[in-house]
Amino acid sequence: MAYLDPAQIHHLTRQRGMPPARLEAGWSDLVARVTRTDPPE
Image (cartoon, rainbow, N blue to C red; front, side, top):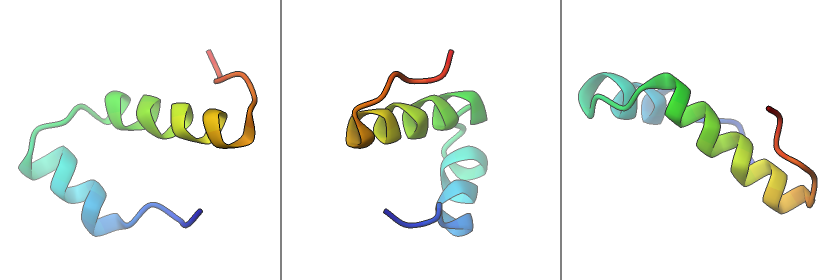
């Protein structure tokens, strides 16, 4: 896994209007699936 790309975050949040909370939740879910742990609440 790699770091989140700042340009991609900018694109999703500013240009596409994705709420930062949704981006964080998706990233946390992905990490939990890959590491087979429970996602943070």
